[in-house]
Length: 275
Length: 301
Image (cartoon, rainbow over all chains, first blue to last red; front, side, top):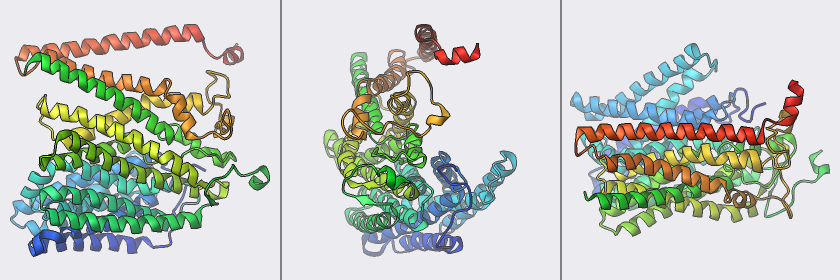
């Protein structure tokens, strides 16, 4: 068996719940941050990052489902692919939203476009490249959609809005899109990559997705310090650090539960022990 | 721009890039990231549990891009607050190193606990002793990459913003570290009890060296070994990449005239040709000196 497993992943939390959690949580976070942007000096922009974290957990689960078919070294590529599709769809959706004079529709348009791109790439991988992974079409769609929510959510956390002109000036031109791309992509791909192995467990993987999403949130908060103002940035950073701590402790307690042994120090297991 | 200042800035960029390449490779060797990781991951499955740091963050290019992009972003925010450049780059690298430390920790813990059935333990002392040096090396890498990017933005007036440049150089240093330095650790150190040049026999898959000169081998021993050759050679490779790719446009500045732009293209092509010929010569002479593995030759005959 390859290190990445070779079949359907076993899940305690069913995928439909995680899909709903990602889409609804993501959009609620983004829109809440958008509508509350004028309240209390924009401190509610951290809601966008919360939406991004919901999408991260969903996306990491989708990566887990497709990568369980023995992708191995392909796991990082999937994460990069997700954010690649996400950037295109997010910018297209927000630009079209502004173009038709309905900024508020931007994230939804982006989500739909991302799903179409993801589906096409999924069909392409299975039918043309003949990868023959049964869940490919569905997971590619999910990965692209979660990547898009992740990008828009972090952009909202940085700037307080998803109006295309503002995002263009404050996120793309300043180069912060690079950190959104890589921190978001790593938050999607790292959880499964870090927990890869025959005894991988879904909740442990998802807790590390929460933790990595929180790191992206803290970075978005640091950017918000200069893109918005000190109070908006500090709130995002502090909430992010709190979620990171919660995520890391949850992950660590599951490591202690799942590992053969967690020891302070020690020699290798003896021959008898290995029998 | 005064050509002399340009050459000085270029020399500084080359020096910073050389340090970045060396520290990047040693950082990845402590955690056995990238190519050598597959054997570290396989070892417990072949009933060779070990005390090597299994740092499967991702491939080297994405993980280095992450720390450099975070460093560049934080430094850029600090520069917007009119902080001095040295302080801004240092704070950026510090945040990047901390984030890198959390990624390394979750990778080690996660991978080891996913190998429960092979009785691979999570050794907390490995985590405590290895993660700080990993963070230290990642700080050096990020800081030097930020120096390169900062010089490009301020001295050479590169149109890209600092975070984006740092991101691109992060991918580059990761790619070069992965292709240049890993060979030294993966093929030579993990299987140093096999005859030199024998290649990796399938029967030896996962049978990595787990015992050191004294006691059990740790990933710090591997970093010490790679610091002798693999790290410096990665540094030279990356330093040359940064220096030569910028040198052609500094000497033959396309901003001055179109002819100079074409001259830079020609010089760049010449450099590549010289390197290709030189590499070929070196490979042929190495094959002559060390020859094919003798046993293979007998089998073929």
